[in-house]
Image (tube, rainbow, N blue to C red; front, side, top):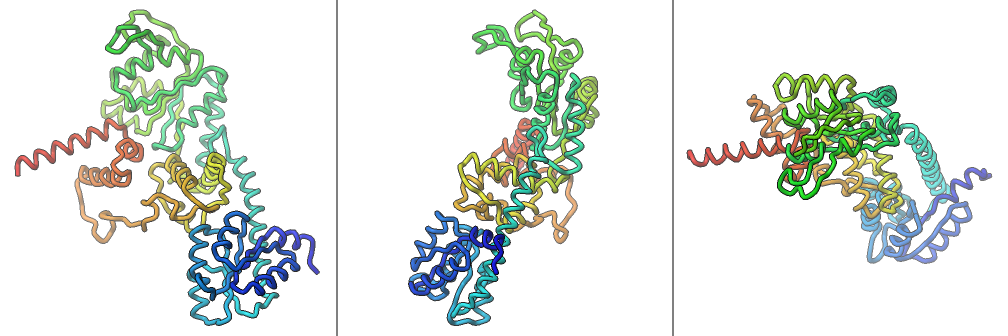
Length: 468
């Protein structure tokens, strides 16, 4: 006797029956409904595809031999449309070879006519139980996702839990903080969390990307300027330090600043004083300074590119945000977070990723870290036409088989470090379709550093051509 639970599980499974024989469609749908399944039937393959799109059928029973479109062709079309659909092929001419071919192409099962309904019910019960477990898992994953968030930052790895713990301890003290970590790892999110948990959370949080501005513009952005102080200064404006007085200023990519700018920043930290560009007036400000960099500032200090006194002022408290390679266990929960985010943003009911898509994403190195992962899911969620993101929805460079290229063991040869650097930069530029801003982010260097490299490379090429 069927239990109430089994009946509920069966009722939640909608089966589409496709056969060119209308009597067979009617008989099969009646038997399935009597057994407790939701069933719809048709003799038209195009109509079946439409029902799958509009009525949420997750299982399709398909006759192998049909005029106009055979079962294998339909299988290929339906899996292209939605890789999450389970297709059961039914044939009157069983052979081991055709069964193996059907399974190889993605069929879930391969049954003979006349249908053995007890076996069919067992197959459908297995699928209904699978969908039920998945639903329960999604519910648990949703709870896990809620428990894996800290001020909007997603992570459950030991490395990220350490970051959250240190941030909570530091946030309540009005002190300067240095946040380090690779590009795209979420340094700005940590900075915002520090502000939102601080005693001045109700005050302003101002952001400045130091790598995006040349020195003159950066000084005006931070300190403000008076009218007529430089060409284009048509009015007097306060800078970010005045704007966020009493709150927090976040300096992203502080390692890209010049030594002259570093001296001005040191004065703000030491004396809490600023001067607008073109003005002799000294103003007092009270701001919390949070700086971030993807560079090794200790190495920059040794190389003479970063002031030692400023480094020690900034790094009295240092929070290091790990890259995805140091916390691969966070990738599943990040995928779930971004799927939910972009499902809502684009008005789609995305169920998840296919297994093959998950394998590709788990095996990728993620040089752009969380930002790159989010961009991939955002793009895939926007372009996919199905409830499941598949490999074909991913960027082209992720669809290609991985290879180690010139650095593989078989054809390795010793190279000067400059040559290794050149090859790597060229590969990243190619991966980013020559987008220099994106390439600089992936490489973890400032745009100016990349431009200097390209300019030097161009001069070398011109010199080589002239000497030829």
